[in-house]
Each structure stands twice: as C-alpha cells, then as structure tokens.
Amino acid sequence: MKTRLVRIGNSRGVRLPKLLIAQAGLTEEVELHAKDGAIVIERASAPRAGWSEAAREMLERNDDLLVDPPVSTHFDEKEWEW
Image (cartoon, rainbow, N blue to C red):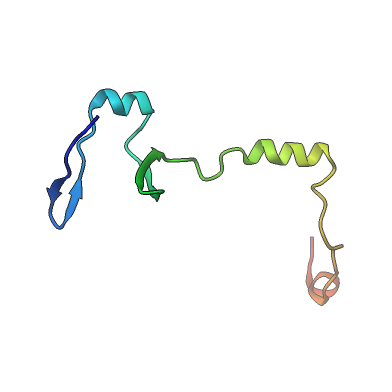
C-alpha cells in the first residue's frame, strides 16, 4: 500500500487504515524502530512477559540458587531481632 507522509507540527505522520491496524493486532501503544531503511511499527511488548515461566524453568533445573553464599553482618548477629 502506498501512502504519503502528512505534516503534524514539525513532525511527519502516516495515517494507518483501521483494517491494517486490526490485521497487525496493534493497540493504542506501539513500539517504533528503524531497520534496514524501513520504519517498523510493532505491538508494544509487556516488560516482564515470560518471566514467570522462566523462573519456573530455573526452579526445575535447580538453577535458582544464590551465586554467592549468604554472609552474616554485624547487624545480623548483634542488632536484628525477630
């Protein structure tokens, strides 16, 4: 589909047909980036999408342990009260 850039203040914009927006599954918030001479408009990704599944997989692999062993501090030994 060929279209024109339209002036929006000091910027330029493109009007996207409703059908094209629906086909791409776009919502109110999108991500833009330039790639190989093109401007790409993508659905905005959820910042922590997939984290719970990744944590579950780490637990199954027993890969969710601390890197370093815990070290007691003066606060732990003398000041902390339960």
